Amino acid sequence: MSAKKDMTNGGPSRRSIVATLTSATALTLTGLGAGVAVAAPAKWGKNENKASAAMSYRPSYHFSVPDNWKNDPQRPVYLDGEYLYYYLYNEDYILGGSGTSWRLATTTDHVNFTDHGVAISKHESANGDCWSGSIVIDEKNTAGYGEGALIALVTQAPGGVQAQYLWYSTDKGRSFKPGGTKPVLANPGVEAFRDPKVIWHEPSSKWVMLNAEGDRIGLYTSVNLKRWKRTSEFVRTTLGTLECPDLFQIQASDGTKQWVLGTSANGKPHDLPATYAYWVGDFDGKAFTTKEEDPQWLDWGFDFYGAVTYPDHRADGSENPKLRRVIGWNNFWDYPHNAPSMATDGYNGDDMIVREVRMIAGAESYYLASVPVKQLDKLAGRAKSLGSPAVSGGHVLDFSSSAYELECELSWDPANPPENVGFELCRAKTGTRHVATGIYLAGGFAYVNRKPSFHPGDKSETKSPLEVPSGRLKVRILVDRSSVEVFLGDGRIVHSHRVFPLDTDSGIKLFVSGGTATYKNLAVRKLAFV
Image (tube, rainbow, N blue to C red; front, side):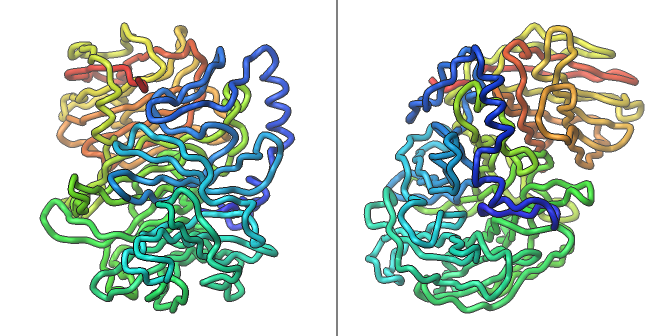
């Protein structure tokens, strides 16, 4: 994903969206900010991610930008025992400045992050600011900047023409310099030509690049990261402008190795998500092929865009072939500048929780399942057991928090199922404001509905097909000050939503209509950086 975007093949460009702080947002800051202490840029490091405003939307346990603006995550890379996480950052956002730099944070556990400031500056190149791309470690010095140099392939758009440029780092990724002024992959004359994702393909001893080009992903190979040859393309014409491509191999639960091609795509015109779409298939070093015409979706919510996956590493530095991780942007281009965190905390930009991703060999197909990263347990308080209540109608829990995890197993009589089973989250005491999530068994789908809660977007409810013939379903929910993430079953179905409840909207209500269901082993635990 870059700084220009056409979500519906005819909407406003992302370039114009991200370029300046809109007048509407400026009015929000002036209006809502009256009488509210606007936080100074948040000082946060390994265990710090806090704000001092009286009313705060700064997450308690999710990654957020220290100040101003963030959007696209960039694929983290593993170096010397830590992961380098770069993301697009506009340090001039509040002042109305345009363009994005790459800011760096590091982590060893995918939960606590240490900020290192800007690594690739939008002010350093005559080719303009820096959009999305990817970083690789050039262990064999193929590009000529030294063994172990970090090479970034980054989209820039001088004169409005998108192309891929090389930047390099010899100080372990803390800063980068442009590797010349000319693109390493020039634009052949198309509008969308961005978001290069580079991997090393060991069998062919070549670098492989995926490049987002409108309704297709172009695939290229190179021996030196500087000269690229187009080898194939992957085309899907029903998902709008494809962005942020991804390609990786993973070992499935049956022991086989499967290739996955992913991309951020827009399924909204077809009542599908606009998140991370993926296909399972084969890759021979030049072309990706699959029998699947339609994609599967890693997330069914509104706010998991520009997601990137990255490998898991063992203690000795080797890659674990069975596990990847994924991080996604907690926002969307339908409402990028309307976050009230600008008024309360002086920033706009969070991520959803880092997840562990595994490939499951299902009865009919292979699929990806994702769950919150295991290291999240480090931030958890003592679990509060709430028993196994059997509910018909509604039941308000004796629990209140703005940042927590909820787990249980829902069960009901499969021969006589209820119509609707779910939760009211971020709930006001009267229930007039809340976020509803559950399983509408009468219709065969799971859902998250934020319409009863404040949100600047015009869309309220996401749905995913879900049949539960066994009458049992595991549920895990993460709630933070500006997000709700719902994980169902083994994690094949996930809904991620950006929300903005009031401080007092912190209750939970269980509800069942048209029958009875049991919330077996219901437990909650608060989560926060320590």
